Length: 217
Image (cartoon, rainbow, N blue to C red):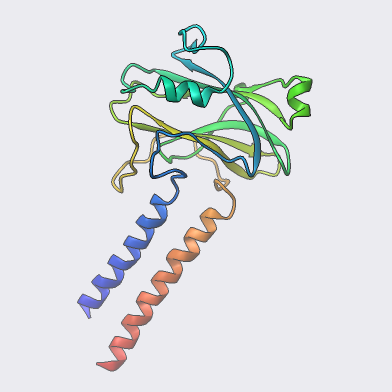
């Protein structure tokens, strides 16, 4: 009986870890920028490292920030206090109310100060507003995963840009969740519910096996 219960617990924990790992949008190479262009119109234009734009750093003209990052990718995040993502975006179905970020798959952090007015050409291209999201890297000694998020006026939260700094970020089961203000709205609506359902299903199957085994004995 104890062996069966132990196996059931292992099965449930394994399923939970697999679901957590799948939350990374580009697990094969997290240093590569991932965009959600199916849900949003996006233009990532500018990088700021410690408050200095990539133009002032001599990394080229404004625009195509993902290419700028790829060409000047930092080997370490230890010298980076803040990393700013500037551009514009707009939901294809709905309107963005707030911009924010997540660090290492933690809870989303929003700030009204991240919103900038959008010019008419941006609005014509499908942008709800410009964003200037300041992410506290805090001289991380390890690779750090950064996810830019948008909250719609309906309360739903969407990941729309994701990449790591300082090397390939790999989720660790024992990583503590960063201390950040929590938000009650699940990220990527439906994903959280699906995860819970999947874990519950696995748990039910495991418990059913225990019941059957008990009856057989």
